[in-house]
Amino acid sequence: MKRNGLLGLLTDFGSDSYQVGVMKAVIKSISSDIDIIDITHDIDPFDVEEGAFILYKAAQDFPTGSTFVAVIDSGVGTSRKAIVMRTKNDMIFVAPDNGLLTVVGKLLMATEVREIMNRELIYSHPLSNTFHGRDIFAPVGAHLVSDTEIRDVGSLMDTYEILRYEEGYLDGNVIRGRIIYSDHFGNLQTNIPLNVMKKAGIVYDDVVTVKINNRRFKMVFTQTYGNVEEGKPLVDVDSSGYVEISVNKGNAANTLRVQNKGEITISK
Image (tube, helix red, strand yellow):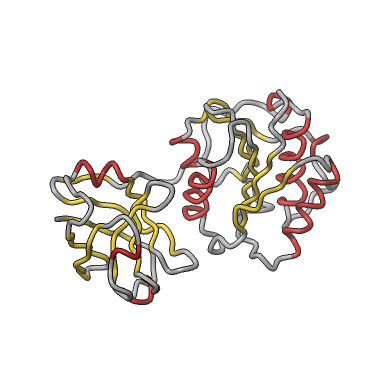
């Protein structure tokens, strides 16, 4: 099947890394017609959980038939596998088999996973021991966008690596979740979907208790940042439908002194 021509890139290489440009050059050398979209290259180094969550959040706004190359790969050059996943909405994800596809596999529903074995799709012979983003993932993604069928990549896999990931949930009258990452503005992004707030009976304008790292904060659950005074913390729902902790015209991570990811609870 002909893909829609879009290829989303996500890595932990850093926005200033020449390696990102090299991957794009490899993709364009296979087909200059591919539209490359940079999701982000600023995932925290080696943070597979953060990458897995952001990959899912971004994929929700891509059209059906899109292809993604995701590279967070501390195991590059080892025996870890390189894989391709198709999901129910006909999206294709190319990544190392290290848990990076956990969330898209679960929430977008993986229908097919294959190990990359077809050497004709590889860019460099012999392979580099340290840059499979260039040698394997970018070219395979480009071939899949172009005219290669997923069945031609390699053999089917019965299982693939999965992180111990779960959505935030309601436990009695307490919502339990995790802070997954802090964005450029210091907003604390969680794995708690809006529907869990609804299950807990929490509605907009309610004042809730937020517990992070054994410290408790009172803040309002509101629709947007400007509904509270400047410098005040708040609970809101981001554009992907997940709860975040923010500060109006401020940095929640700094204001609340949250340096590490970890558990969060919310209750009335």
